[in-house]
Length: 433
Ligand code: SF4
Ligand code: SF4
Image (cartoon, rainbow, N blue to C red; front, side):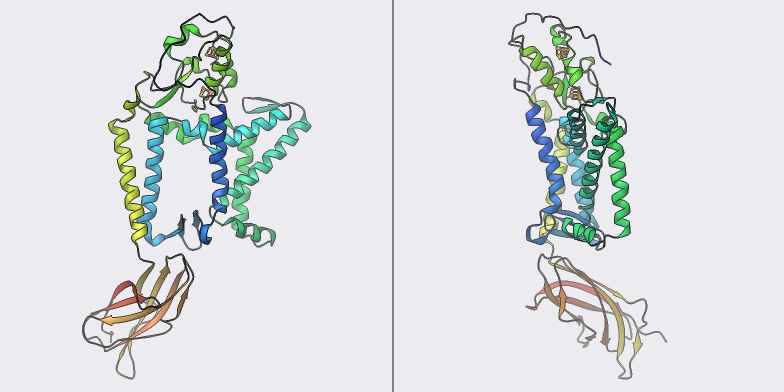
């Protein structure tokens, strides 16, 4: 709610008011815009960067794997997925605990696209009020077409995190984009278009769950934007802070859940007060009480930071120390073991081999028993050509002496230099009569 807006001259007060973190007197707008665009461009362009042909971040649905900075984590390595999600969530909690909704105002793509959408509407001489555009119909049509273009770009950008962009465009232009992807793309486009056209800031105010979670996370030292009580007497009631606020709130009324910490009101107030040779009244403080920097190091933040560091250490240690290949073996459910004419036993197996490395490789599979019994493999178990990241199912038969009682066979995956890459065990059971 806006307060009184009746500009008057400021009281003449000393310039030497001190506060803990807001000693800057310049404007934050250029910094915020640079940061916003860098983070939005990073999200837009990240899928295009593929050093060594490997995606930096992509979920490959057909192979159920996560591509993470050149590493491929398969669904079998679920604990790595979970660690990744946990590290990501804790980082978000920590950032929120320390800096409140700074993410929303300074980095969230929703805010950046909204800023761009409203900027374009103003360029087209439309009035932007309460998520509505007012002005000539032809101007609104041009703006809506621009929003449609933005919606297509953002929707495609989201798809690129599942289908690498070059393949996406090749399939798109050759008409080979699967129906499911088309449907997803169109649904995303429609949602984003409606968001840009009719919802915009309402999303941050009412719907975004992060804003609600943030209310529960802030503590007495969280970065806050406010006009301290001690400055109220200096306010000249020009309302520039309200006019500049994209969320249409009056920061002079105190901390509000809708505030995205963007700092526009701070800049607006600094600009006005500068003409009176006075510092601005709105500032970033640590908590309402403007605590010192050391208050950031409290038990909650230290616990979260430690948890974040430990989880990341475990995650990266697990990723970088795992072998270049994995092997899973299971007795076939579709073919029963049997005794051959030679008197030997044939047991049917399925193997799943995964090349986790970043290069193609040729593998071979061998088997050995813990006793001196000789076993051999039938089927294609050598010269297994595997491209980088490929997961391959191999069916084969183990020929062994007839089992009188269950015994263990060890299967070994070897590379071309006969180096052992992975080992898996299986139990050979006697053939049922
Ligand atoms: S009150 Fe200030 S910091 Fe908060 S959303 Fe409005 S302009 Fe941004
Ligand atoms: S911009 Fe500053 S001086 Fe003007 S109303 Fe807001 S807080 Fe008061």
